[in-house]
Image (cartoon, rainbow, N blue to C red):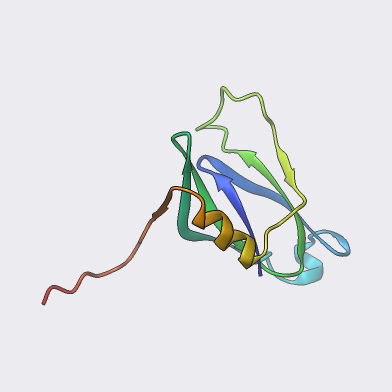
Length: 108
């Protein structure tokens, strides 16, 4: 698995694998990209951790227009995805939060 952090209000656009731009018809499926329940807080900005499958080499991300309409950045291409060890190192040196969804608390 590979990983990257993505700012709140941004989304994944195009994805590249070793043979070029990800083609759903060729792969017969969407690329496996999942947002994890962990985020960093840097300068009051939430950076969510995403996990991607090994076949993915490059990810293009862009702001969600309704949220970030005033931003001047149109898109960013992430070419250096992180390993699990790099993520652990980054989490260890940052202010982190854990965002839990669909968890039932058991009161004893």
